[in-house]
Length: 309
Image (tube, rainbow, N blue to C red; front, top):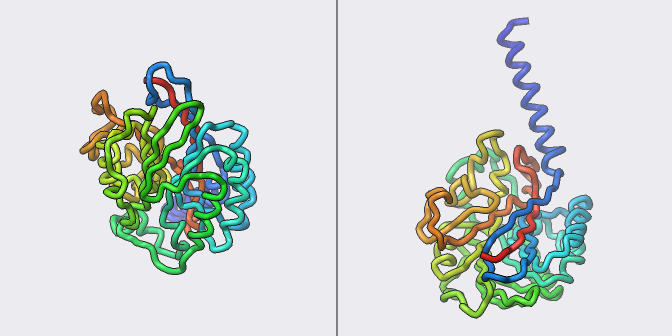
């Protein structure tokens, strides 16, 4: 056989194997990340915050439902859901089944674009271009009101351009959230204001971690900001990392815990001032049903242990 053809055939085989792994194995290899974040007042008892994001749940995803239900065994003090929960008009009952044991815990949520609009087929290559970032929602609509009413009836706080207070572990937390910045639905001006000094911590919550939202929340004194949306890049390069974040956040903060301060831009966290806020971006638990692959970026939930500064 011609050596060139042989080499091309080998590369094709590797590519097919990689796609198969990404689509059949890694996208279903759910994992739990754990981080400690020093954001509470001195002497405060630790709090456990379970962060969920980007389930993109389809009605037939029984394994994902059972895995999420099992997270209740972590005994979190607070659950924060940063949106993009559903991917089908019939997914709300299945989502509420997945979250049922966690609804026994104090919680809060914001919405993402796939809580409003069903996913549609797009050229997958656009994900790697700036044009993907300009997308806004379009038909068909999803049953957003059913989703919101189900979560609120379960006892969780709706932070869609709202503030709320919760008391967990004997500590008073202030929560401030916005609607999806990727759709330009965020209205931070509605909830803007200095962090309440009487609260043990002010937590900002957003689906998409656009810099304008992060800057506003941290300028007002949020000590911790929680987000999702990025899927951790979804398709990462081993030993290099994510290629895109699907927003204007830099790839160095595409998932996990980092630092943020007003005007940080693309400045690495290693240059953070002492009073910088903490930022956690979840890589999320799902994918669009039209791009059901993950590579070098496992689907995840996160347990943050908040400790004293």
